[in-house]
Length: 567
Image (cartoon, rainbow, N blue to C red; front, side, top):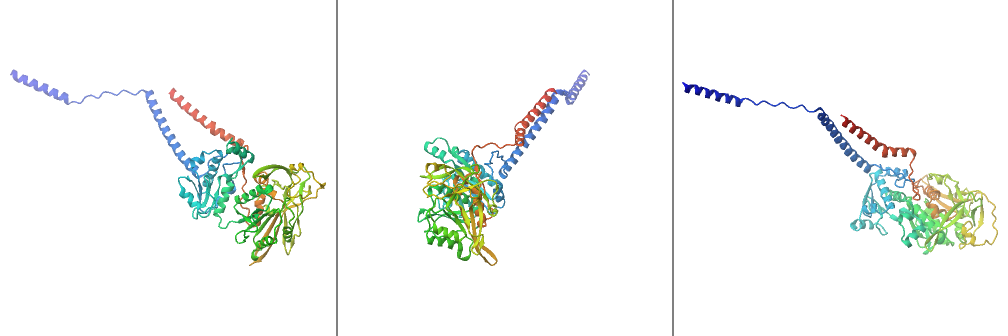
Protein backbone atom coordinates (compact mmCIF):
# COMPACT_ATOMS: atom_id res chain seq x y z
CA UNK A 1 0.00 0.00 0.00
CA UNK A 2 2.74 2.31 0.96
CA UNK A 3 4.51 1.43 -2.23
CA UNK A 4 1.45 2.39 -4.32
CA UNK A 5 1.21 5.75 -2.55
CA UNK A 6 4.89 6.42 -3.28
CA UNK A 7 4.47 5.50 -6.97
CA UNK A 8 1.46 7.79 -7.22
CA UNK A 9 3.38 10.76 -5.73
CA UNK A 10 6.33 10.12 -8.04
CA UNK A 11 4.02 10.13 -11.08
CA UNK A 12 2.41 13.39 -9.96
CA UNK A 13 5.80 15.04 -9.44
CA UNK A 14 6.93 13.85 -12.87
CA UNK A 15 3.75 15.23 -14.46
CA UNK A 16 4.19 18.52 -12.64
CA UNK A 17 7.76 18.80 -13.84
CA UNK A 18 6.64 17.98 -17.40
CA UNK A 19 3.94 20.58 -17.23
CA UNK A 20 6.35 23.16 -15.86
CA UNK A 21 8.93 22.54 -18.56
CA UNK A 22 6.34 22.70 -21.30
CA UNK A 23 4.91 26.04 -20.20
CA UNK A 24 6.28 29.06 -22.10
CA UNK A 25 8.65 31.43 -20.40
CA UNK A 26 7.21 34.85 -19.59
CA UNK A 27 8.55 37.67 -21.96
CA UNK A 28 10.13 40.55 -20.05
CA UNK A 29 8.55 43.98 -20.61
CA UNK A 30 10.52 46.54 -22.86
CA UNK A 31 11.62 49.78 -21.39
CA UNK A 32 10.15 52.95 -22.95
CA UNK A 33 12.67 55.06 -25.06
CA UNK A 34 13.70 58.36 -23.58
CA UNK A 35 11.84 61.18 -25.47
CA UNK A 36 15.08 63.17 -25.85
CA UNK A 37 16.78 60.20 -27.50
CA UNK A 38 13.77 59.73 -29.80
CA UNK A 39 13.99 63.41 -30.93
CA UNK A 40 17.71 63.19 -31.61
CA UNK A 41 17.22 60.07 -33.69
CA UNK A 42 14.39 61.66 -35.68
CA UNK A 43 16.33 64.88 -36.40
CA UNK A 44 19.46 62.90 -37.20
CA UNK A 45 17.57 60.87 -39.78
CA UNK A 46 16.14 64.04 -41.34
CA UNK A 47 19.59 65.65 -41.44
CA UNK A 48 21.04 62.54 -43.08
CA UNK A 49 18.28 62.52 -45.68
CA UNK A 50 18.77 66.24 -46.41
CA UNK A 51 22.52 65.71 -46.75
CA UNK A 52 21.96 62.87 -49.22
CA UNK A 53 19.54 65.00 -51.26
CA UNK A 54 21.92 67.99 -51.30
CA UNK A 55 24.85 65.81 -52.35
CA UNK A 56 22.73 64.28 -55.13
CA UNK A 57 21.68 67.76 -56.32
CA UNK A 58 25.29 68.98 -56.30
CA UNK A 59 26.40 65.97 -58.34
CA UNK A 60 23.60 66.46 -60.90
CA UNK A 61 24.21 70.22 -61.15
CA UNK A 62 27.94 69.61 -61.57
CA UNK A 63 27.29 67.18 -64.42
CA UNK A 64 24.87 69.60 -66.07
CA UNK A 65 27.28 72.55 -65.72
CA UNK A 66 30.17 70.48 -67.10
CA UNK A 67 28.04 69.59 -70.10
CA UNK A 68 26.95 73.18 -70.60
CA UNK A 69 30.53 74.46 -70.42
CA UNK A 70 31.49 72.11 -73.22
CA UNK A 71 28.47 73.07 -75.30
CA UNK A 72 27.93 76.75 -74.50
CA UNK A 73 30.21 79.69 -73.58
CA UNK A 74 29.38 80.04 -69.91
CA UNK A 75 32.69 81.67 -68.96
CA UNK A 76 32.59 85.41 -68.24
CA UNK A 77 35.11 87.72 -69.90
CA UNK A 78 35.39 90.85 -67.76
CA UNK A 79 38.38 92.39 -69.58
CA UNK A 80 37.78 95.83 -71.08
CA UNK A 81 38.16 94.72 -74.71
CA UNK A 82 36.79 91.21 -74.27
CA UNK A 83 40.12 89.66 -75.27
CA UNK A 84 38.92 86.15 -74.43
CA UNK A 85 35.67 86.50 -76.36
CA UNK A 86 34.94 86.60 -80.10
CA UNK A 87 32.89 89.30 -81.81
CA UNK A 88 29.28 89.08 -82.89
CA UNK A 89 30.47 89.21 -86.52
CA UNK A 90 32.41 85.98 -86.04
CA UNK A 91 29.52 84.39 -84.14
CA UNK A 92 27.12 85.24 -86.98
CA UNK A 93 29.56 83.73 -89.46
CA UNK A 94 29.87 80.57 -87.37
CA UNK A 95 26.08 80.23 -87.30
CA UNK A 96 26.09 80.00 -91.12
CA UNK A 97 28.96 77.51 -91.29
CA UNK A 98 27.91 74.43 -93.26
CA UNK A 99 31.29 72.70 -93.63
CA UNK A 100 33.20 70.54 -91.18
CA UNK A 101 36.48 72.30 -90.30
CA UNK A 102 39.46 71.09 -88.28
CA UNK A 103 41.48 73.35 -85.97
CA UNK A 104 44.74 71.46 -85.35
CA UNK A 105 47.20 73.04 -82.91
CA UNK A 106 50.74 71.73 -83.38
CA UNK A 107 51.61 71.69 -79.70
CA UNK A 108 50.61 69.55 -76.71
CA UNK A 109 47.62 71.05 -74.95
CA UNK A 110 49.40 71.02 -71.58
CA UNK A 111 52.29 73.07 -73.01
CA UNK A 112 49.89 75.43 -74.76
CA UNK A 113 47.98 76.10 -71.54
CA UNK A 114 51.08 76.78 -69.43
CA UNK A 115 53.15 78.93 -71.79
CA UNK A 116 52.13 82.33 -70.44
CA UNK A 117 49.11 84.63 -70.48
CA UNK A 118 49.29 85.24 -74.24
CA UNK A 119 49.12 81.53 -75.11
CA UNK A 120 46.32 81.02 -72.60
CA UNK A 121 44.43 83.76 -74.44
CA UNK A 122 44.77 81.89 -77.74
CA UNK A 123 43.56 78.68 -76.07
CA UNK A 124 40.46 80.41 -74.68
CA UNK A 125 39.58 81.98 -78.05
CA UNK A 126 39.99 78.63 -79.80
CA UNK A 127 37.50 77.10 -77.37
CA UNK A 128 35.04 79.89 -78.11
CA UNK A 129 34.85 78.81 -81.76
CA UNK A 130 33.92 75.25 -80.79
CA UNK A 131 31.30 76.50 -78.34
CA UNK A 132 29.38 78.45 -80.97
CA UNK A 133 29.26 75.69 -83.60
CA UNK A 134 29.59 71.92 -83.77
CA UNK A 135 31.19 72.20 -87.23
CA UNK A 136 34.63 73.03 -85.81
CA UNK A 137 36.74 70.24 -84.32
CA UNK A 138 39.64 71.35 -82.11
CA UNK A 139 42.61 69.08 -81.41
CA UNK A 140 46.13 69.46 -80.03
CA UNK A 141 48.92 67.42 -81.60
CA UNK A 142 52.47 66.96 -80.35
CA UNK A 143 54.60 67.21 -83.53
CA UNK A 144 57.42 65.12 -82.05
CA UNK A 145 55.19 62.15 -81.24
CA UNK A 146 52.77 62.55 -84.17
CA UNK A 147 54.95 63.29 -87.23
CA UNK A 148 52.41 61.63 -89.55
CA UNK A 149 49.80 64.27 -88.76
CA UNK A 150 52.29 67.07 -89.46
CA UNK A 151 53.43 65.44 -92.70
CA UNK A 152 49.84 65.08 -93.89
CA UNK A 153 49.43 68.86 -93.68
CA UNK A 154 52.94 69.65 -94.91
CA UNK A 155 52.08 67.91 -98.18
CA UNK A 156 49.67 70.74 -99.05
CA UNK A 157 51.56 73.65 -97.44
CA UNK A 158 54.37 75.45 -99.26
CA UNK A 159 55.93 76.85 -96.09
CA UNK A 160 57.42 75.03 -93.11
CA UNK A 161 55.11 74.02 -90.29
CA UNK A 162 56.38 75.03 -86.85
CA UNK A 163 55.52 74.14 -83.28
CA UNK A 164 52.58 76.28 -82.18
CA UNK A 165 51.12 76.72 -85.68
CA UNK A 166 47.36 76.39 -85.97
CA UNK A 167 46.26 74.51 -89.09
CA UNK A 168 42.72 75.38 -90.21
CA UNK A 169 41.59 72.84 -92.80
CA UNK A 170 38.55 71.47 -94.56
CA UNK A 171 37.75 68.21 -92.75
CA UNK A 172 36.85 66.50 -96.04
CA UNK A 173 39.52 68.13 -98.24
CA UNK A 174 42.88 68.47 -96.42
CA UNK A 175 44.38 70.27 -99.43
CA UNK A 176 42.17 73.28 -98.58
CA UNK A 177 44.00 74.71 -95.58
CA UNK A 178 45.48 77.84 -94.12
CA UNK A 179 48.25 77.89 -91.52
CA UNK A 180 48.01 80.51 -88.78
CA UNK A 181 51.43 81.12 -87.26
CA UNK A 182 51.27 81.70 -83.53
CA UNK A 183 53.42 84.86 -83.82
CA UNK A 184 50.99 86.43 -86.30
CA UNK A 185 48.29 86.51 -83.63
CA UNK A 186 50.00 89.33 -81.72
CA UNK A 187 51.15 92.89 -82.29
CA UNK A 188 54.41 93.72 -80.60
CA UNK A 189 56.15 96.87 -79.43
CA UNK A 190 59.26 96.86 -81.61
CA UNK A 191 61.48 98.71 -79.15
CA UNK A 192 60.50 96.48 -76.22
CA UNK A 193 60.97 93.42 -78.42
CA UNK A 194 64.51 94.39 -79.44
CA UNK A 195 65.35 95.15 -75.81
CA UNK A 196 64.06 91.73 -74.77
CA UNK A 197 65.84 90.06 -77.72
CA UNK A 198 69.17 91.69 -76.90
CA UNK A 199 69.07 91.46 -73.09
CA UNK A 200 66.82 88.49 -72.39
CA UNK A 201 65.13 90.50 -69.64
CA UNK A 202 61.36 90.04 -69.37
CA UNK A 203 59.02 87.78 -71.30
CA UNK A 204 56.90 87.79 -74.44
CA UNK A 205 53.93 89.16 -72.48
CA UNK A 206 55.96 92.33 -71.80
CA UNK A 207 56.26 93.43 -75.43
CA UNK A 208 52.92 92.18 -76.80
CA UNK A 209 50.52 95.12 -77.19
CA UNK A 210 47.67 93.72 -79.30
CA UNK A 211 45.83 90.50 -80.04
CA UNK A 212 44.52 89.70 -83.52
CA UNK A 213 43.79 86.02 -82.98
CA UNK A 214 40.14 86.35 -83.94
CA UNK A 215 41.04 88.20 -87.14
CA UNK A 216 43.39 85.44 -88.23
CA UNK A 217 41.22 82.50 -87.24
CA UNK A 218 38.00 83.86 -88.75
CA UNK A 219 39.93 84.82 -91.89
CA UNK A 220 41.30 81.29 -92.14
CA UNK A 221 37.76 79.94 -91.74
CA UNK A 222 36.50 82.25 -94.49
CA UNK A 223 39.26 81.09 -96.81
CA UNK A 224 38.80 77.38 -96.10
CA UNK A 225 35.02 77.48 -96.49
CA UNK A 226 34.98 79.83 -99.50
CA UNK A 227 34.73 77.89 -102.76
CA UNK A 228 36.36 80.72 -104.74
CA UNK A 229 38.32 83.19 -102.53
CA UNK A 230 39.47 86.54 -103.95
CA UNK A 231 43.15 86.52 -104.94
CA UNK A 232 45.27 89.66 -104.64
CA UNK A 233 48.65 90.20 -106.30
CA UNK A 234 50.88 92.83 -104.66
CA UNK A 235 53.34 94.11 -107.30
CA UNK A 236 56.21 94.78 -104.90
CA UNK A 237 59.15 93.99 -107.22
CA UNK A 238 60.52 94.95 -110.61
CA UNK A 239 63.21 92.63 -112.02
CA UNK A 240 63.91 91.38 -108.51
CA UNK A 241 64.25 94.84 -106.92
CA UNK A 242 61.76 96.58 -104.67
CA UNK A 243 59.62 99.00 -106.63
CA UNK A 244 58.64 101.16 -103.67
CA UNK A 245 60.75 103.04 -101.12
CA UNK A 246 61.72 100.36 -98.60
CA UNK A 247 62.83 102.86 -95.95
CA UNK A 248 59.45 104.56 -95.83
CA UNK A 249 56.98 101.86 -96.84
CA UNK A 250 58.23 98.38 -95.96
CA UNK A 251 56.10 98.13 -92.80
CA UNK A 252 53.16 99.87 -94.49
CA UNK A 253 52.99 97.21 -97.19
CA UNK A 254 53.35 94.51 -94.57
CA UNK A 255 50.38 95.99 -92.69
CA UNK A 256 48.26 96.14 -95.86
CA UNK A 257 49.02 92.54 -96.82
CA UNK A 258 48.26 91.36 -93.28
CA UNK A 259 44.95 93.25 -93.23
CA UNK A 260 43.89 91.70 -96.54
CA UNK A 261 44.88 88.21 -95.40
CA UNK A 262 43.04 88.62 -92.11
CA UNK A 263 39.89 89.56 -94.00
CA UNK A 264 39.72 86.54 -96.27
CA UNK A 265 41.85 87.53 -99.28
CA UNK A 266 44.54 85.26 -100.69
CA UNK A 267 47.59 87.53 -101.06
CA UNK A 268 50.66 86.87 -103.21
CA UNK A 269 53.71 89.00 -104.03
CA UNK A 270 54.50 89.64 -107.72
CA UNK A 271 57.25 91.04 -109.95
CA UNK A 272 55.94 93.57 -112.47
CA UNK A 273 58.31 92.47 -115.23
CA UNK A 274 59.00 88.78 -114.69
CA UNK A 275 55.59 87.53 -113.46
CA UNK A 276 52.46 87.12 -115.53
CA UNK A 277 49.61 89.38 -114.43
CA UNK A 278 47.00 86.81 -115.35
CA UNK A 279 43.37 87.96 -114.91
CA UNK A 280 42.36 84.29 -114.78
CA UNK A 281 44.40 83.96 -111.56
CA UNK A 282 44.17 87.35 -109.84
CA UNK A 283 41.08 89.40 -109.04
CA UNK A 284 42.97 92.45 -107.75
CA UNK A 285 46.44 93.90 -108.32
CA UNK A 286 48.11 96.43 -106.01
CA UNK A 287 50.86 98.72 -107.31
CA UNK A 288 52.47 100.59 -104.39
CA UNK A 289 54.20 103.83 -105.46
CA UNK A 290 57.11 102.82 -107.71
CA UNK A 291 60.02 105.14 -106.90
CA UNK A 292 60.91 105.26 -110.61
CA UNK A 293 58.67 105.22 -113.65
CA UNK A 294 57.63 101.91 -115.20
CA UNK A 295 58.09 100.85 -118.81
CA UNK A 296 55.55 100.99 -121.63
CA UNK A 297 55.36 97.19 -121.62
CA UNK A 298 54.45 97.24 -117.93
CA UNK A 299 51.65 99.73 -118.63
CA UNK A 300 50.35 97.43 -121.37
CA UNK A 301 50.32 94.50 -118.92
CA UNK A 302 48.30 96.54 -116.41
CA UNK A 303 45.84 97.68 -119.10
CA UNK A 304 45.41 94.13 -120.42
CA UNK A 305 44.73 92.87 -116.91
CA UNK A 306 41.93 95.41 -116.38
CA UNK A 307 40.44 94.78 -119.83
CA UNK A 308 40.45 90.99 -119.24
CA UNK A 309 39.80 90.22 -122.91
CA UNK A 310 36.64 92.31 -122.78
CA UNK A 311 35.23 90.56 -119.73
CA UNK A 312 36.44 93.24 -117.28
CA UNK A 313 35.65 92.46 -113.56
CA UNK A 314 39.29 92.99 -112.58
CA UNK A 315 40.64 95.74 -110.34
CA UNK A 316 43.85 97.71 -109.74
CA UNK A 317 44.78 99.69 -106.62
CA UNK A 318 47.50 102.29 -107.15
CA UNK A 319 49.28 104.18 -104.38
CA UNK A 320 50.95 107.47 -105.25
CA UNK A 321 53.50 108.91 -102.83
CA UNK A 322 55.79 111.88 -102.17
CA UNK A 323 58.84 109.57 -102.32
CA UNK A 324 58.39 109.04 -106.09
CA UNK A 325 60.44 110.66 -108.79
CA UNK A 326 58.88 111.74 -112.09
CA UNK A 327 56.60 109.00 -113.48
CA UNK A 328 55.23 110.24 -116.84
CA UNK A 329 54.16 106.76 -118.07
CA UNK A 330 52.19 106.06 -114.91
CA UNK A 331 50.64 109.53 -114.92
CA UNK A 332 49.49 109.14 -118.53
CA UNK A 333 47.96 105.77 -117.68
CA UNK A 334 46.09 107.20 -114.67
CA UNK A 335 44.84 110.18 -116.68
CA UNK A 336 43.42 107.81 -119.29
CA UNK A 337 41.19 106.61 -116.47
CA UNK A 338 40.27 110.17 -115.50
CA UNK A 339 42.49 110.65 -112.40
CA UNK A 340 45.39 113.09 -112.14
CA UNK A 341 47.97 113.05 -109.32
CA UNK A 342 49.38 116.40 -108.15
CA UNK A 343 53.09 117.09 -107.53
CA UNK A 344 52.75 118.24 -103.94
CA UNK A 345 51.80 116.90 -100.52
CA UNK A 346 49.04 118.04 -98.21
CA UNK A 347 49.95 119.62 -94.86
CA UNK A 348 47.44 120.60 -92.19
CA UNK A 349 47.65 124.32 -91.36
CA UNK A 350 45.36 123.99 -88.34
CA UNK A 351 47.48 122.50 -85.59
CA UNK A 352 44.37 121.66 -83.57
CA UNK A 353 43.00 119.58 -86.46
CA UNK A 354 46.24 117.70 -87.16
CA UNK A 355 46.67 114.19 -85.74
CA UNK A 356 49.90 113.67 -83.81
CA UNK A 357 50.98 110.19 -84.86
CA UNK A 358 54.11 108.02 -84.86
CA UNK A 359 54.84 106.51 -88.26
CA UNK A 360 56.90 103.35 -88.66
CA UNK A 361 60.01 103.72 -90.82
CA UNK A 362 62.46 100.96 -91.74
CA UNK A 363 66.13 101.46 -91.01
CA UNK A 364 68.41 98.48 -91.50
CA UNK A 365 65.58 96.06 -90.89
CA UNK A 366 64.42 97.75 -87.69
CA UNK A 367 61.20 99.70 -87.15
CA UNK A 368 61.88 103.28 -86.13
CA UNK A 369 59.02 105.44 -84.89
CA UNK A 370 58.94 108.92 -86.48
CA UNK A 371 56.51 111.47 -84.97
CA UNK A 372 54.46 113.51 -87.45
CA UNK A 373 51.52 115.92 -87.55
CA UNK A 374 49.16 114.48 -90.17
CA UNK A 375 45.95 115.72 -91.82
CA UNK A 376 42.77 113.68 -91.53
CA UNK A 377 40.40 112.65 -94.30
CA UNK A 378 36.63 112.34 -94.34
CA UNK A 379 34.42 110.01 -96.38
CA UNK A 380 33.11 111.52 -99.61
CA UNK A 381 31.41 108.42 -101.07
CA UNK A 382 29.52 106.25 -98.58
CA UNK A 383 29.33 103.32 -101.03
CA UNK A 384 32.94 102.41 -100.28
CA UNK A 385 32.48 102.86 -96.52
CA UNK A 386 29.54 100.49 -96.09
CA UNK A 387 31.57 98.10 -93.94
CA UNK A 388 32.57 100.62 -91.28
CA UNK A 389 31.18 99.93 -87.83
CA UNK A 390 32.02 103.42 -86.56
CA UNK A 391 32.23 106.21 -89.13
CA UNK A 392 33.15 108.82 -86.50
CA UNK A 393 36.71 107.53 -86.11
CA UNK A 394 39.30 109.60 -88.03
CA UNK A 395 41.14 108.43 -91.14
CA UNK A 396 44.69 109.74 -90.95
CA UNK A 397 46.24 110.78 -94.28
CA UNK A 398 49.96 111.56 -93.87
CA UNK A 399 51.85 113.15 -96.78
CA UNK A 400 49.11 112.56 -99.35
CA UNK A 401 49.41 113.87 -102.88
CA UNK A 402 46.21 115.64 -104.02
CA UNK A 403 44.12 113.99 -106.73
CA UNK A 404 42.01 115.65 -109.44
CA UNK A 405 39.13 114.07 -111.36
CA UNK A 406 39.39 114.89 -115.08
CA UNK A 407 35.74 113.98 -115.60
CA UNK A 408 32.84 112.63 -113.61
CA UNK A 409 31.23 110.64 -116.39
CA UNK A 410 32.20 110.11 -119.99
CA UNK A 411 32.51 107.41 -122.63
CA UNK A 412 35.84 106.52 -120.95
CA UNK A 413 34.20 105.67 -117.63
CA UNK A 414 32.85 107.08 -114.39
CA UNK A 415 34.99 108.61 -111.62
CA UNK A 416 34.25 109.28 -107.96
CA UNK A 417 35.91 111.01 -105.04
CA UNK A 418 36.24 108.59 -102.11
CA UNK A 419 38.12 110.56 -99.44
CA UNK A 420 38.75 114.28 -99.01
CA UNK A 421 40.99 116.26 -96.70
CA UNK A 422 39.87 119.11 -94.45
CA UNK A 423 39.55 122.59 -95.99
CA UNK A 424 42.49 123.91 -93.95
CA UNK A 425 45.32 122.04 -95.72
CA UNK A 426 47.95 123.75 -97.83
CA UNK A 427 50.15 122.37 -100.61
CA UNK A 428 53.81 121.63 -100.03
CA UNK A 429 55.87 121.11 -103.22
CA UNK A 430 57.19 117.55 -103.53
CA UNK A 431 60.76 116.87 -102.46
CA UNK A 432 63.02 114.17 -103.83
CA UNK A 433 62.80 110.67 -102.45
CA UNK A 434 65.88 111.16 -100.30
CA UNK A 435 64.51 114.21 -98.48
CA UNK A 436 62.16 114.31 -95.52
CA UNK A 437 58.59 115.46 -96.26
CA UNK A 438 57.33 118.54 -94.43
CA UNK A 439 55.21 117.69 -91.41
CA UNK A 440 57.69 115.25 -89.89
CA UNK A 441 59.64 116.30 -86.78
CA UNK A 442 62.82 115.20 -88.56
CA UNK A 443 62.22 118.06 -90.97
CA UNK A 444 63.97 120.48 -88.63
CA UNK A 445 67.31 119.00 -89.66
CA UNK A 446 66.95 120.35 -93.22
CA UNK A 447 66.49 124.02 -94.08
CA UNK A 448 63.88 124.56 -96.83
CA UNK A 449 65.34 126.20 -99.93
CA UNK A 450 62.18 128.16 -100.84
CA UNK A 451 59.38 129.74 -98.89
CA UNK A 452 56.25 127.57 -98.89
CA UNK A 453 52.88 129.25 -99.36
CA UNK A 454 50.85 128.02 -96.40
CA UNK A 455 47.56 129.49 -97.52
CA UNK A 456 44.80 126.88 -97.17
CA UNK A 457 43.56 125.60 -100.53
CA UNK A 458 40.31 123.99 -99.41
CA UNK A 459 39.28 120.34 -99.48
CA UNK A 460 41.47 118.08 -101.60
CA UNK A 461 40.76 114.56 -102.88
CA UNK A 462 43.11 111.97 -101.35
CA UNK A 463 41.40 108.80 -102.67
CA UNK A 464 39.45 108.31 -105.91
CA UNK A 465 38.07 105.53 -108.10
CA UNK A 466 37.32 105.12 -111.79
CA UNK A 467 35.09 102.50 -113.44
CA UNK A 468 34.73 101.27 -116.96
CA UNK A 469 33.19 98.15 -118.40
CA UNK A 470 30.61 96.57 -120.65
CA UNK A 471 27.28 94.76 -120.59
CA UNK A 472 27.15 91.07 -121.49
CA UNK A 473 23.77 89.31 -121.67
CA UNK A 474 22.15 92.21 -119.79
CA UNK A 475 24.69 91.84 -116.98
CA UNK A 476 27.06 94.75 -116.26
CA UNK A 477 30.76 93.90 -115.91
CA UNK A 478 33.12 96.60 -114.59
CA UNK A 479 36.79 96.97 -113.86
CA UNK A 480 37.87 99.60 -111.35
CA UNK A 481 41.01 101.61 -110.72
CA UNK A 482 41.40 102.96 -107.19
CA UNK A 483 44.05 105.65 -106.58
CA UNK A 484 45.23 106.69 -103.11
CA UNK A 485 47.43 109.70 -102.46
CA UNK A 486 49.97 108.04 -100.16
CA UNK A 487 51.26 104.64 -99.08
CA UNK A 488 51.31 106.15 -95.59
CA UNK A 489 47.54 105.63 -95.44
CA UNK A 490 48.50 102.02 -94.65
CA UNK A 491 51.21 102.90 -92.12
CA UNK A 492 51.80 100.01 -89.74
CA UNK A 493 50.90 102.02 -86.63
CA UNK A 494 47.76 103.53 -88.16
CA UNK A 495 46.56 100.15 -89.42
CA UNK A 496 47.01 98.54 -85.98
CA UNK A 497 45.47 101.34 -83.94
CA UNK A 498 41.75 100.72 -83.38
CA UNK A 499 41.22 104.43 -82.64
CA UNK A 500 41.74 105.17 -86.36
CA UNK A 501 39.61 103.98 -89.27
CA UNK A 502 42.47 103.47 -91.74
CA UNK A 503 42.43 99.67 -91.72
CA UNK A 504 38.67 99.27 -91.62
CA UNK A 505 38.11 101.85 -94.37
CA UNK A 506 40.63 100.31 -96.77
CA UNK A 507 39.17 96.84 -96.32
CA UNK A 508 35.65 98.20 -96.68
CA UNK A 509 36.58 100.07 -99.89
CA UNK A 510 38.30 97.01 -101.40
CA UNK A 511 35.32 94.82 -100.44
CA UNK A 512 32.98 97.27 -102.18
CA UNK A 513 35.21 97.49 -105.24
CA UNK A 514 35.50 93.73 -105.67
CA UNK A 515 31.87 92.99 -104.85
CA UNK A 516 32.90 90.98 -101.82
CA UNK A 517 30.22 92.78 -99.83
CA UNK A 518 30.85 94.17 -96.39
CA UNK A 519 32.78 91.04 -95.41
CA UNK A 520 34.03 90.67 -91.86
CA UNK A 521 36.07 93.58 -90.63
CA UNK A 522 37.37 92.57 -87.21
CA UNK A 523 39.43 95.02 -85.18
CA UNK A 524 42.51 94.07 -83.22
CA UNK A 525 42.14 94.00 -79.44
CA UNK A 526 44.52 96.13 -77.42
CA UNK A 527 46.33 94.40 -74.55
CA UNK A 528 47.78 97.54 -73.00
CA UNK A 529 46.45 98.55 -69.59
CA UNK A 530 43.86 95.78 -69.45
CA UNK A 531 41.25 96.39 -66.75
CA UNK A 532 38.14 94.63 -65.54
CA UNK A 533 35.17 96.29 -67.20
CA UNK A 534 32.57 95.72 -64.46
CA UNK A 535 29.39 97.78 -64.25
CA UNK A 536 27.49 98.52 -61.03
CA UNK A 537 25.01 95.76 -61.83
CA UNK A 538 27.87 93.34 -62.54
CA UNK A 539 29.42 94.28 -59.21
CA UNK A 540 26.15 93.68 -57.38
CA UNK A 541 25.80 90.29 -59.03
CA UNK A 542 29.36 89.41 -58.09
CA UNK A 543 28.74 90.47 -54.48
CA UNK A 544 25.69 88.20 -54.34
CA UNK A 545 27.66 85.25 -55.73
CA UNK A 546 30.76 85.79 -53.61
CA UNK A 547 29.29 86.91 -50.27
CA UNK A 548 25.51 86.60 -50.06
CA UNK A 549 25.18 82.93 -51.02
CA UNK A 550 27.86 81.67 -48.57
CA UNK A 551 26.37 83.94 -45.85
CA UNK A 552 22.89 82.47 -46.36
CA UNK A 553 24.29 78.93 -46.13
CA UNK A 554 26.09 79.84 -42.88
CA UNK A 555 22.93 81.35 -41.35
CA UNK A 556 20.82 78.33 -42.26
CA UNK A 557 23.44 75.97 -40.85
CA UNK A 558 23.74 77.97 -37.61
CA UNK A 559 19.94 78.08 -37.20
CA UNK A 560 19.53 74.32 -37.70
CA UNK A 561 22.35 73.58 -35.27
CA UNK A 562 20.87 75.93 -32.63
CA UNK A 563 17.42 74.36 -32.87
CA UNK A 564 18.86 70.87 -32.53
CA UNK A 565 20.68 71.88 -29.35
CA UNK A 566 17.57 73.41 -27.78
CA UNK A 567 15.29 70.46 -28.46
